[in-house]
Length: 290
Image (tube, rainbow, N blue to C red; front, top):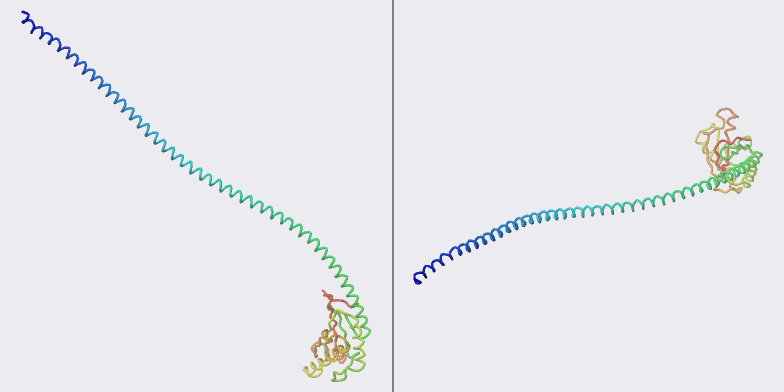
């Protein structure tokens, strides 16, 4: 009986162990599936977090790139701003230098203007002194010329001119022989007296002009006037008048004192004139005879 029951018990134990094994197996599978599901869920979560992290990293990278670009732009703008600032500073320095130069030039101009005004005042004062001195010398010289004219008038006809005076040696007081250029004794005496007055004076030159009437050939009269003027000039030089002060010229019949064919007019036209040219005063107008 016991032998008969032993297989039955063995089979009953085997039968009872199978469900347990199945349960264990199923539980193990469930646990494995749970673990797999948790791993998958964690994997999905990780992938989601990784994707989000990558997106965030991409966003951060883009932001970083934009920040770098903005930083570069700011750097460039800062560099340009610094350059503009330097240019503005250089321009300001140039302007300040130009202003200082302008102020210096203005000051120099002011000093120059002041100096010019002072020089102008001094020049005006000096000019006034010169004019006063020139006026004094002119009056003194005119007084000397008046004295000279008065002294010469006692010898021969003398008149004042804008340049000085003219001594007229006409035939009524100074006579040449007919067709001659030789000085007569009375002519020499007159010229000696004239030379004495001139030697006592100064500041003049002499222009001696010979003239004839209109009788005879014109060429002959021209030569005769030159010879007579040379005779008068030569005598004055012998009397002591420096040769450098004497000019001689003949006019023949071309410059008559009286334009008439009468005997009296021809006598007036036959003459030698001594022009006393003043070399000290420059006259502006006609000097009237006192």
